[in-house]
Length: 263
Ligand code: SAM
Image (cartoon, rainbow, N blue to C red; front, side, top):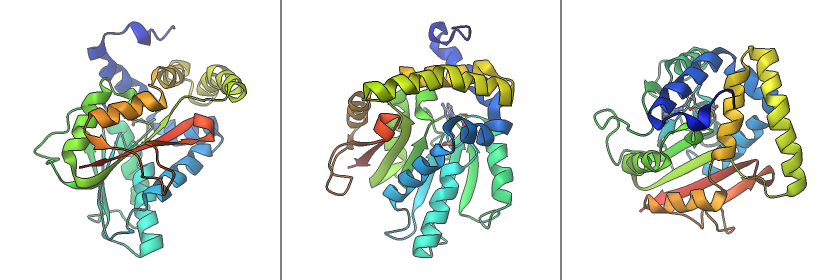
């Protein structure tokens, strides 16, 4: 591709990803809505409702690759609205300061601003500093639409395992593999033509959005990713109220939720 991503050496990937998100940070939330026709909101709501933060009392959560705080806000709202919980907290971690700044601005308008319930940290999912993120600390680790941008998925999972408490939950929301051939054809058409075009029109940035589409294609399939989660030490399956399985497809696999528990 003109973005040349596939041939870029691994060590440059992080700085490339950083540049992509630097250039999209201010338009990120609007673009998300435009590109997914608002559907990402439904998926994120579904994801957080499945995790039921606050249902067993206040939780310590870490939202990695948390960007502008979309998941963090939903976690805090869910636990407050459903369980009157004002003690659950979320540490948002992202490699990109611009995305975090957008998140900080957004939280300024909420009741969580200036409370111990929310904090933003610049950091790499693959090597969370031990001094800041000690082992066995969190009840819930979330990563939404972020892990596919990381150079080493096993390193991300290793860190997730380390920072979670025994019994803590790892939960990933990510674009995945569409199983139905008809849906797959429509989706391909949409993502390879419409998304880069929207990137050009709305953000004057075709290359970054082209990269986002390609990163989705390269991400492992549902069973391969589930295997990686197990290899990191997590127990998967039995998490979905009787349905079993390590993952749950959303919209035929356009997106998918994988979960695992630290033993
Ligand atoms: N979780 C947010 C959401 O669902 O709206 C943001 C998702 S955004 C598509 C991906 C985010 O991953 C970006 O904010 C980017 O900076 C971050 N990211 C990419 N590589 C990362 C890494 N190695 N460590 C931490 N964050 C990373």
